[in-house]
Length: 243
Image (cartoon, rainbow, N blue to C red; front, top):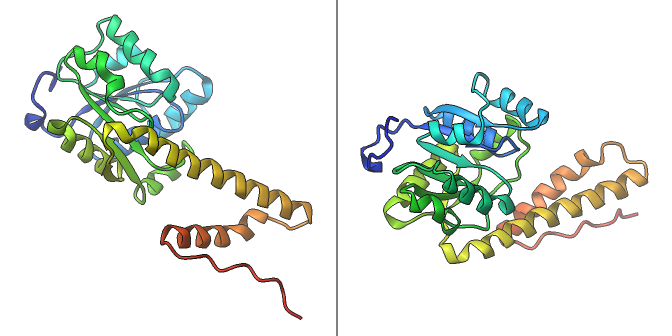
């Protein structure tokens, strides 16, 4: 396989990329890297919905089994749920699937590279890159990636590779040390789940009093309030109508 076993600094820069997982994240990152000039060699997809998503974002890319994706790829992206990641990595190691010099990147927020130890034992190069955004699994995400940040964790000699891949996905890389990944995961999960719950509650209240398209009404308010909070400014209260 071209590039496998070659030190990262000697690579041509164009990689054969395989995606394990066709949920909301994997196909989007594959499309982003494909747009950056990499060759997407295959994606694993089981359900009908995941196959449709893969076909929409990666037309013409073959749907393969997980071992086939790993066998054909110079860069393997593991875009699977966080609780499935350790078993997947260990299972592929047990079958001898990992290859020396192969780049293995996972997208789980709560793990650094320690979870990739079974692949590292086979000579693979471990990278952890988590784009900090809520994915829809559609082409809309490609534009949103351009405004996002990505947490990157990797051994020092290959950290520039993780950072470069984040940039090629469209995101701004920020280094999160291995020991801080759990705290990072808690922070992004709290922000995402809290924001979603509050907005849904507000939409339900407005819909209950007969407001049409409550989401459109709340959009500017929520965006400005969040922007103020992120900038460290105290949001102005929403004042009641005056007589």
